[in-house]
Length: 323
Ligand SMILES: NC(=O)c1ccc[n+]([C@@H]2O[C@H](COP(=O)([O-])OP(=O)(O)OC[C@H]3O[C@@H](n4cnc5c(N)ncnc54)[C@H](OP(=O)(O)O)[C@@H]3O)[C@@H](O)[C@H]2O)c1
Image (tube, rainbow, N blue to C red; front, side, top):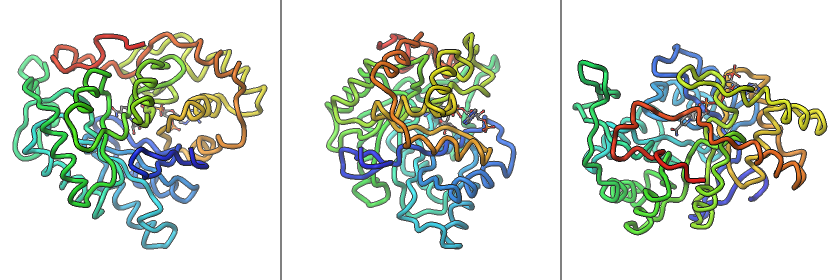
């Protein structure tokens, strides 16, 4: 780790705290435009987004304005986006990427991830992003060639359009397949990690293969309606609350610090300026080894993002709890 950034296997550096931008499948207009501008003003230099979030144009507008008003230069900010499941074939990688780059109004991305291993049926040119049959079941593309898609991801690097490539929601079998069939190894795996889902084996597998882990949903995704919130919800866990009091920090800061001390970067989402600042202030304290163990002891393999609609796909990554 170098300061507030982690060094990646390709020599690039990823800021350890980034801003998440997922607001659901029908995002209210304008919220992320404002949030990204505020985030940059309060010091964020890492934005995590995706084509399916439906807000890449807003993120692009905000970043462009902050470059224009000289708050940042392009090279100061680390921007991540993701290849969506309807583009899970080699021939669709470039069009999906081009759309993301155009919407973000950038000429390169810092990090491009395969969003998840499952493929959906593609409909030209860009929709629907969640294709379903008349009963509402997802229409899968079960012939996904991960290695072939990965070769197209590598070409984006070769063409200078992306600095770093990686995956998201891949389990260890799916990562191993890419490790065995790639020229450029996956550099990042973005997965859900938080104290109720510590993912120790998958994180160890990634880190021992020089794959950096980014945690999504690091605060337990309290807004997410689809999941059953555990009791108590992560941010209301009395053990974490009591630790937070001891360190004179907030519960969220203790959770984020726990992840960062494991070498994991985090992308908490907030549209609230105070909480955005709070989530950045995690570099002025260190959790003791015992407190790290106690936090790890809260694991219950609880996922906010089980993605149940994907469970029937042969590429669904979460059948085994790799822990
Ligand atoms: N790769 C993937 O498949 C994948 C999947 C899911 C998510 N993600 C990424 O990960 C990001 C984060 O995940 P997430 O948005 O589901 O969940 P999260 O970051 O765990 O939680 C966000 C929620 O916590 C609240 N919050 C933020 N900071 C807080 C604080 N300091 N104290 C109390 N509450 C706080 C936010 O409310 P306010 O906005 O009101 O502050 C929001 O309701 C996403 O936005 C997205 O970029 C990636």
